[in-house]
Image (cartoon, rainbow, N blue to C red; front, side):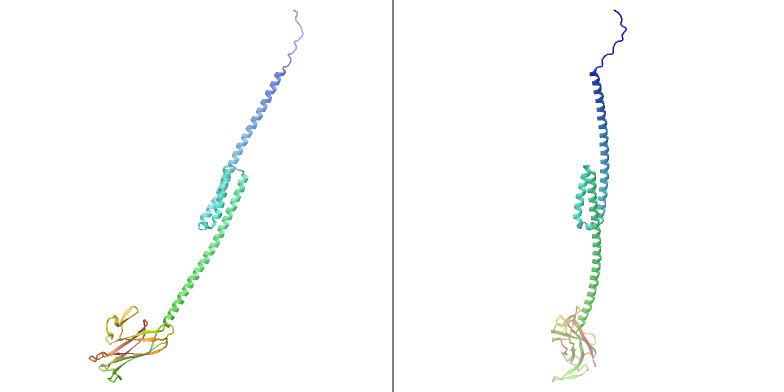
Length: 307
């Protein structure tokens, strides 16, 4: 067989194989794009989570600062808490809502708006507290002033009452004017003969004018006379309570007494004491006479008896 000098023609291209290669390239490109998108998306999600966490921390910090200021104001004004209970409930409700929004990573701007609302409420709380403090301070000062005025008024009233009581006490006093004590001898016919001789004296006469008094209650009153001998012994009919009266808490013996119907007008009074026996003479010396009525000493005088 003779050798041919002509070159062999190249083999024809395989269309099926070329199509598969193109599809493979296309798939690789699509996969690369999808992978890049996933990587980008993951990075974006991580960034968003980091940003959300940072915002959450920031918002929580702002919330804590607002609540710290609110708590500090409450602690400084505990005596006013009862008057601020309505605001307290509103503030605590808003705080709880904001904490839920932060925990659920809600919209940042929404939470910020809620925080601003809470901040305004707490500022109003502070303003109201300040107003109450101012009002209470003014009321306290006014109360102090009123107490001082009441105290002064009481002191003045006490002083006036004391002065009035003193005036009433003075006005209600009785006085025995022109008090005279005289010794006499009573003759058999009843006639009185003045004498100061101890062996002759049988009667002591007392005469005086009882003062007018418009303040005391009118009615029956008792005048007591105490006559003391020169040796200081009271000339009394007995030593028991039947012949005594009370004066400033002390029980005193009396010599004579007389009931009078007092009608708030001045009236003349006469009293006398008679010696019960003539066996003994009157004690020579200076005698003292004291008159009492309504728990008061109303007069005093004296007389002398000679041997």
